[in-house]
Image (cartoon, rainbow over all chains, first blue to last red; front, side):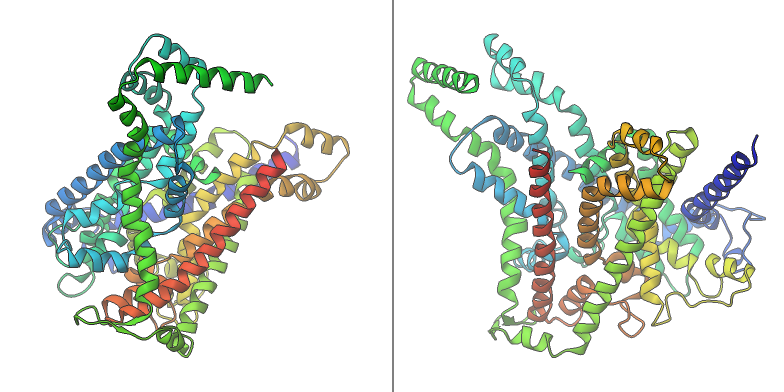
Length: 275
Length: 316
């Protein structure tokens, strides 16, 4: 092994270790803290490898807030958004890809325009609108604004357009009904895009803190991220072990999904950024 | 020519089928079908996106405290107050500082990481996953995690600094440092995503260019400057704009970690809209800030699409 080769190897090892420390160690610290006793969390210098472990913080996090209630809310909101997005995106993308009709450009323009208006801008008028309708603290106020996705319509339309016309012609010759064509040709062809969009919708809805925070004033329909955040206000003092335990329970589903479908998720995000 | 022929034959086919089942009801159904398919999505966009964007402009001309039944029209009053408010300028400055800091550090770091992780080895693949993982974790969890890491007395970050012989740093309580601490967290969260996008773009650069450069005995830095960077520039341009837009929307870390403080040092546009709206009940004023944000985001979106059309021209 030449010296040059050796030094490159050493250099790479150092950089790799640094990268792992910077990007992974915080998560390790989160996990370790969650298993520490309250006394152990306030030690300085901190114990990098804890001398004793306990699961009490998880039980504390579970009982300090109505955890199950928030979890159920999160599940309801996330799955409603997923189902509604599928139901609104698929037909819209199909129509935009397959038909020509009057006003198509304007309607598509509306979709594209709405893609650029972020929730951070619309929350104030929508809060006013929902409170006029008496819908603050309702599932509707958390679900409906995300019941469709302009990005989804755009991506799926692009995919549908790539279906070879021979395939469609063949189906037409077989007198396949439109619904059959959608189920047998369009949806199977677009499966990767649909999975991608579904995953993006799941991750962003599950993780969303902003919208449930601004659109709710009570615990009734609050979702897990906001519920977990309220752990910092419990009684007196800050229980970092309990807070970390709560946050681990919040990010666990995302981590599981990520470990299960890393390739797909990474492709989904690069796909989104590349366009 | 061929295309036209096909188009005409397709048109004929269409006419034939229309003539075949010339029942009126079928025709109505055929005409309205696309609209029916699109209606649910478009209604949602109109009600929950387009309407509120227009509404926020309208609200910005009023003096209203959310509770009282009457809104008082004051024209540009809110904007005039805004431009006489030193707090607003600090908020704007903070947001711009945060954006420039996040975008420049995150992108230059990602560029280095992408070039470093370019080779397709097992280790690099693992590293890519690791640096990407913060990106998919909820921003609220990230905020809590870093609040703990940045704790002045018992935080891990200050422990590491103490090992290096550096005094304790008040990451979030120091007016001149707090905003930069938030920039660091944002870089930590977004660097992995930017790296992956740049990596994807790197893979599209044809290998023969590098082979040619090697034949010419071009150095690493020269190759990077003359080949890699120019061919990455469209990707870097898009990432810059996307990152700028998302940085202008920062909220979670501020709300959880600093509450806009100390002394307004970390207050930003979205947090200010939230605060003026829900804490001080100055809806018109909050909306005026919203309109400023809307204008900023529109400018960058327009730039994005300009770039997109140029890119298309370039390729076509």
